[in-house]
Image 1 (cartoon, one colour):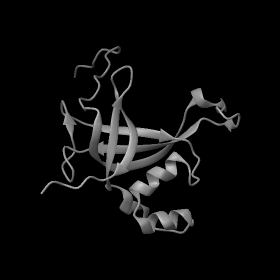
Image 2: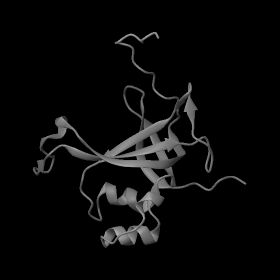
Image 3: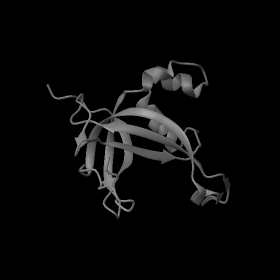
Length: 145
């Protein structure tokens, strides 16, 4: 076994800016120390954020995209706010069916496992360090016939 150098960083995945198909994989909550304190509106902020993980696809209705043998997966984060005007609610409206979204809003149960693998469209942009990031989550594109 040969271990890599401790200082070796990964290269950014090779993905272009613009709209790209993806599937929803997971929703987690992570702690971010840099956000603990007061938010930009003067409200207390515990630093916790929702993280939504997506698998990028090679085309609408296609297969997972690989870059140098690695799956291309991207995540985005939102605050824990879930009200109708929140970014999280906007993303849920895209990921969930209309019936699931209505059930979620009414706090009624639905089969959350069916959401995994649901196709969406991601709007990709690159940050200052040239890493791709999710700018928006949109409805799935139609697959070419």
